[in-house]
Image 1 (cartoon, rainbow, N blue to C red):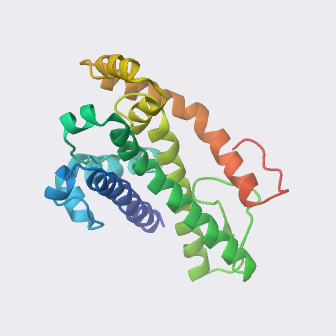
Image 2 (spheres, rainbow, N blue to C red):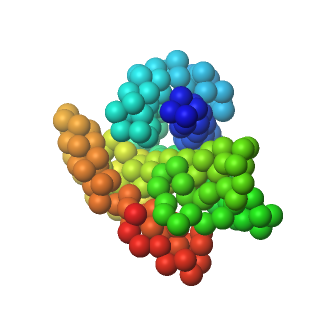
Image 3 (cartoon, rainbow, N blue to C red):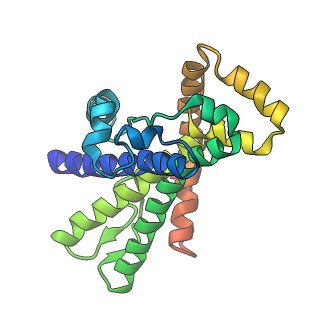
Length: 233
């Protein structure tokens, strides 16, 4: 079961991260920066993204699953920093495209769950976890499908919350500039690009996630199952 569960996690991870990064690249292309497109990364072919980020898309996900039972990792999409500096709002929308892609996958998973409930395949779990956002009414393929769609929702919810944190190098740090004046955004960028800030930002973000994931999952469960009254996960 562990091997099968690991394969489900890895398949969902690869699809989710690829979708996230391709969304960044497509948004940049549409907004005037073809860097990612020229590098062949405006694509849903995961191999292109895995070749660019083998540690973040192969090694770390497998290690994190073996250690913690769930997967995390990363990839990256190149962009022109001079374009971003000249077009800060476009750069912010490019950053927003990645979390928006994860939100789309969360909504897709939620729609599949609601459809499964409507046809009698799925039902609400008594207790929820990352792999049990919904449960099957019968064993067999339905049970595997319930785990798959649960992991799809859970992982993309994690990626959505994590990447929206306004800390470098996460997408949320760029999105912040949408709400700043030109002069304030310039000063903000100067601070955020200082050496060492990315490492500090990641450490803070990782610690914040332990506080945010539970409430985010509880809110999602109660939206998915109105009236169920799920408590803290």
